[in-house]
Image 1 (cartoon, protein in one colour):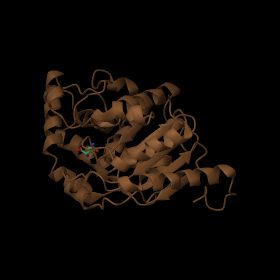
Image 2 (cartoon, helix red, strand yellow; image 1 turned 180 degrees about the vertical axis):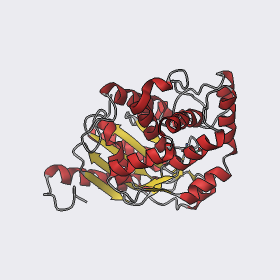
Image 3 (cartoon, rainbow, N blue to C red; image 1 turned 30 degrees about the vertical axis):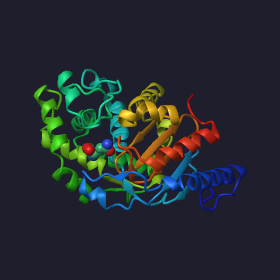
Length: 316
Ligand code: GLN
């Protein structure tokens, strides 16, 4: 698709479309390689042969290839937006509650939390996102609703919604996340009732969006904090910090390898999506549900690697 419907087709449009088509061809052999997440049973029902990729430029134009208009479960990608919303309302509230160092451990690991007395390493492991969700709930009274409203506005689509079946499945199989939350509550690092904080976390992880919508919703980070309507969500410094955390902690315990191969701030989710930011230029979202052992989409990482190699659009 060349740019927005009805818009004149420019050389840039043709180049972006051709680039995305080329990437889709290149990564076709990787689509389906890996395993679809099954620890949340509702996610296991998604077919591993899907692949979509969207590029949104800072002027709001969207280019895409493959299944880029099909919605998928954001999962951990939603942690970026909940963090940004807390920082927008009260960045100081995060102080002492969550760190900014990569964990080097699995995203749902309990071990580190015990050593570090209930203070999660960073906001993108599950423990950290539970704390952020708890803070957002205290600040808004409706953490998952605040994330949903933000995403609907940025994607300019009021039909973006929480997949109730995925949220229920997460809650039903949520013992590990509940254990993390209870453990932190014992250290006073969860303010709301544990089941309330966890429920809002499960709900914002279960928001379904397409690559096109998620790329649009991530553009505020490429615009150094400015939203789709031109208003500012975060100061420049705040956007820098979110991007830095995505770079160092966004791909779970494979963030180092991801930086090495792709070289962009990014956040992956076990639904198979990855969003990435090219500061000042664009946001990307790629989706393919089969994951590597760290929980990152195999074809998704391949696609972003090809993208930055071909364009030179990495931060390095
Ligand atoms: N909701 C998922 C969980 O809590 C998110 C994990 C992920 O995408 N890494 O396990």
